[in-house]
Length: 152
Image (cartoon, rainbow, N blue to C red; front, side, top):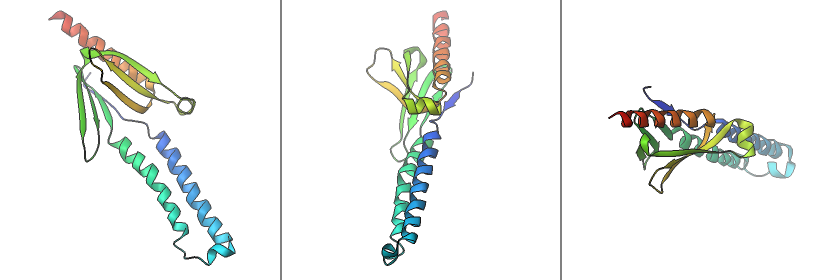
């Protein structure tokens, strides 16, 4: 196994883009169909485009977050301007927990939390596609790392 790169799902981002675009279209339609509002400047309905800031922010955050499972370590990276990287030996992985809300279950995503042995810190990655499969990958890699360590 070389390495496995896990990125957060884009499903919720796509849903938020859809909702924001729908809100923009409804605002423009309301503006065009209301006589009183047409007397206002034409840029007023374009203010609804500001709703796109929220899905765009979420989109960028998801693209810049990843979890890398290597044969001997687990690497969590996030951030653009303030880059954060957490490197953990797989032998320190104690448990992998999956949390899923009803909405996440409908979309097939979940939050992965990796508990580390002997440390208070955890690695938490929200909105991961196929969280059971990701947990299996992490636990299998941690098991292989333990087996390597026991042979030395």
